[in-house]
Length: 259
Image (cartoon, rainbow, N blue to C red; front, side):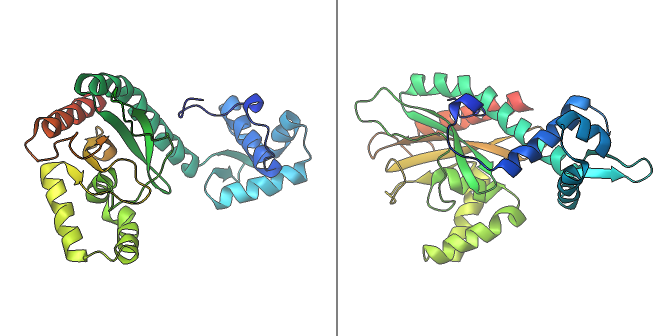
């Protein structure tokens, strides 16, 4: 299954959460109707008792997924759904646009190349292209990794809003016993140079060496990071090396396509 595709009913035999599936079916009604709906209309469409639907609607309103028009007692999609939809569309567009770039780039330089995006739980691999070298770095799409112990993570730590990443940064400083001043200095350098590095092995992190560069959208916000991953001696991570310059150039090309 492609990492950007949703699983189908036939592809999943594990037991799910019925209430969640019912909730999603209610939201689908609004998508299909493309208009506000009343409890009665939802009841007819879903063949479900009104009192049962009402309980879901109350929860949807609490979390901002739906809004209620009290004048005619209808419901419509709320700001939380719109925000989630925009983020999902943005991430899908980034991965879709970047995919051919990643394949071409990996083949041209014969290094493994990864694209990471931000998720609610932190940075995550969205696309990965292996090199043709005898010894491979294996990374699965969906793999999540630390902020401060990886080149990709450091990009997000440097360029995402402080309110979004600072709690995670502080937690890793404490967990890995890092010097906060050194961390802040490195993040500032990354912002200035638009490139981050990892040149030491770290438990659970594939490859012993990596270099990453940020990708931005039309608003100027960072939406992804592009990374070369390999072993010592394979990648030259010096700031002016050919590998680093080509990586920054490719990240800039993707940024231009997004803007």
